[in-house]
Length: 279
Image (cartoon, rainbow, N blue to C red; front, side):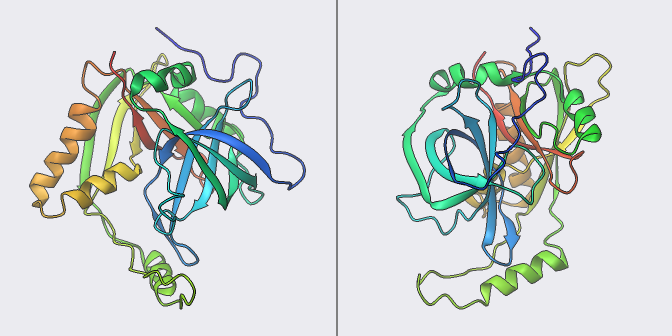
């Protein structure tokens, strides 16, 4: 059954950001924790996204930057936690969903355990056309940049060796690791690149869809590789395919992809995570 966008007919996507820079308290269901990227200032920055639950019309929100390695244990949160956070509009990011969080103002409220507790919030947010998102992003830089898209069919998961950090990324890692940390006492171990990267090949429900190829930048893809660090390359590749294709995209799963684009290349969308409740 075809499903409408979270933004109904006549609604022009996400709400504009507030005109001023006052902090706003947001309540979110965390749905996305992207893989870490090198940062000279933060060591490894993580993009977190979720569905705002304290408004009449739930909307997607992106929080950046967040340094997950340096979150204290009582502050750390995980996917499908409901949290409150004080944040300011991200003025250097034209995407309407982007906010800059105040790190010491993030509070966990509760965790939604199991798909049945999550579906009442997330099922209404599922939409069917990745093609529409691509078209609108090419037309407007502030078009909808986050969504939950249900594919018509998933053709493949292509797993290939990660090329390693670029020279610029490596420079950021080394610059951060060499900074003195006189107060926290925390170590600054360099961020390691994963062995593999992956991309989904799928078609959405729009008539005439020619297919989409989107890289997976889900934290879980990196975490699984760290967990199976002792595996051979062949065994690790097989484990990634078994989890992200065989299990998550199994016929008995109503799979959908959390997708998001890049601030500098708004026409490029990636898979930020997988929503895979049972049918």
